[in-house]
Length: 183
Image 1 (tube, one colour):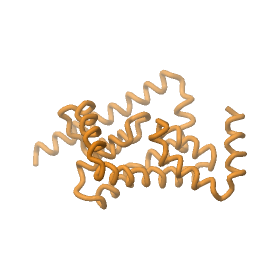
Image 2: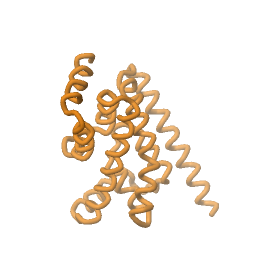
Image 3: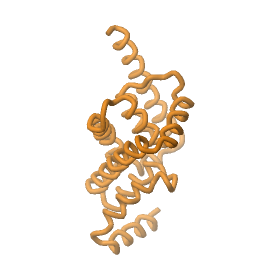
Image 4: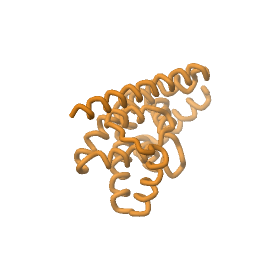
């Protein structure tokens, strides 16, 4: 692992001022390489340190959210595929904004599907980007700062963390259902 860290640092040093641009480009190309968000954010922490890595990951995720919004609005075939995926994964399920934000923290949850879900919940691009900005803050920070240690947890700690996040998800679901039923 130390060799990987050293290799990344040498690559960043050689790229100079272009390194942050390459990293943002990696965020935009990530879906085409089937790279999970957590892997790219962890790389940002290794390559740029916590503060700059988190800022670059946050920026890259926001850019990816904006591009996803416009691609799904302009490409009916992609929109239809996302609709089918949404129906298959979240059958007869209405999520709250809080649940979508929590799902963003969970590793390996389909990023574009969550963007699509958020699109359906918001009225326009401005509201969509507002909730995207809020929902991407925690993953960018957590994955950049703690992503390395989360991936190095023993398997039982990783499973416990996942169950903790699932429990919070269902608690938000129950809260959302009781408050919408009373309105």
